[in-house]
Image 1 (cartoon, one colour):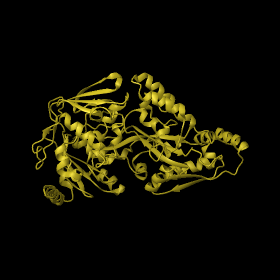
Image 2 (image 1 turned 45 degrees about the horizontal axis):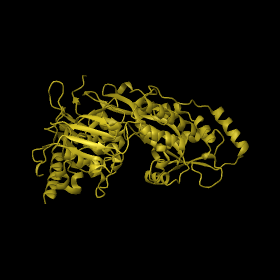
Image 3 (image 1 turned 90 degrees about the horizontal axis):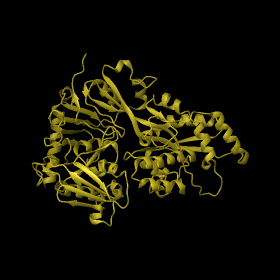
Length: 549
């Protein structure tokens, strides 16, 4: 009864609030204490256990805290954990909790009416919940490094303030796993009280708490009065009093909303609006500079064309020949694609791993060389004469322009190339099942370590169970990655990573095209904005003021 009554009240308040402010119009728009943005993809859950994409992550990160978090420089910093220690050659990780972190008040939930301090058992409960088959969390994999044979399945508490993790073997990226949204801490009382409806009634210890959420209309967060973090002047964070999230699917309306001041920021734009806002060099056009500013940083994301390289037919197929793929890679005008199709918002590359994860400051891209590409194909065609089968590239409608550019460049080599534009769900299924000989895909970092990118090509990760859609298999690659994954010496591990990245660039099971950039369009007057390489949203220190005329 309590759950139903609370849900009804939440919806009722949402409707009244929405009507009272005229559909969230001028009265809210002029409020400098309210930050507003649009989420065109809507939301279906605010439960950290299901935060598998950026849209829910942005909200979940405002409502919850984890033991650690990733800062703008890709460094792990303690949050609920005050400090941590690594022992037993990297197999044991011990975290000491802060004593001033509290769950936000939850009236009607026994034990949480006025909030409650976060303790070690909350961490254990939250992480073990990911393992529960009844929950069916998509984040269970972050616990894979734990020794399931150890006490508590590898997670144990020492008193109320200390958590100990026992790993099967050393795994340096483990901290990055604990920084994912999946690892946020939830109170057992709230989960048990709401059951499946916890997705709509999230209770956490983050800087904000849920005020109301009406699906397809809006979601409003209020500042958490018990939030533990203070600024250098002793003022409690966050500075904002509220966050207002609307759900408008029309990209054009979102664009106009930003220009008219209904939204305070937009992450990226559809390509058609990008051209209007950015000039040929990728800079914000002068006519928008009084209203907006452009914030960018390299994104830990790589777009590529993949190939099914496992030969199941027992006969020579051109696209499974490394020399042919090398020719295709040489024929790609990455610089042209970056500037003409993406307005400089992407970084051309010939490598799969983003340079920041290899401690490189510059990207590398093989320049377009049609003559050399044709020379390679001519040498292959001496052994395997034409005609060759048609090269069909599978993609979705959002990337038709990209694939059309590749089609033109590869047809210039004398090849027969077609584009198969299908729905996202069909595309995912075909690629996962090995039914696409060539396909456009991208890989976005789950955690900030090169291992997360390189593991895509491990032979144990063949699709559909894993992300190795190419079915690339190289025993030397597997052995080197296995060694790197347990190497606690950062310098030695980085040598392995760079070697593996070069091996992929040589074998070319995929053709890397570009690393994306996080691109934020922020209203003038928004202060304290932080942009990071995994495009997470941090509103703790954001302030708003009226921009000077």
